[in-house]
Image (cartoon, rainbow, N blue to C red; front, side, top):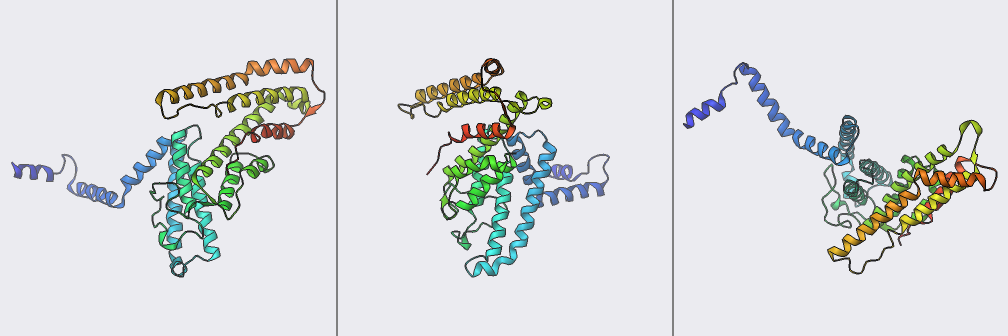
Length: 333
């Protein structure tokens, strides 16, 4: 019986030349040794997690990022002498920071902040990448792998936190890539700013990244609102209409902000947690209703009959909308 099984396993499938079968086996063995299966599995998991609208483009971008990581890793092999002396040179450290920043930003772009689980995972990956950088990191602790180390807590594996200057640079890049003009994001970044020498813990980092992601969406929506109010052929929009829209937007923001101030008697009990979640859900629905097309239409109709004269250009409207958001941003000390 055993001999029969051996003959069966060693037999060439019908219709396939023996040489071709041997080549197929060698190809499979080569792919297995090269770890192609693991690479594909990891890429597909990332794609599913990010729910990309362009799967092929996502995979291409993913493998380009992996290739760049491999290239920079091999290019940095010559830094051994510098590491053995106890520190990287200023130029090498700056290059290392830029590489880690580029990789961190790539991970932060993978999923929209509304995809909470995927977004939180990517923020953690970005934090760990940036936490590898800086003079507080001892050479012996530098990871040799092409990906992120599997540390158990946000403050492990680095020097106690991301350097403040690198954190601020990350937020600047996120706002810029989100289509927010530098003049519009500047007040927000001043509110979230950390000194260069400060070590930023994970909670502060996540708060800043999430705030910038939401702010970018918010500004794009504000720009669309102005485009709806404005008639391009007639120049800037009427000030009365813009103020009506801003007033409605302010009311919606105040309603949604109540979601974060709901107190809970005992957050450890399941019943109270469910109640808190329900209250938050109701608040968000109320806020959405206040900015609905019907409510906006009502406010604009009332503004046309009574309201200040003159016009408001797009930049003034954008700055006013941004101020409504920024004044509600919590400063984490």
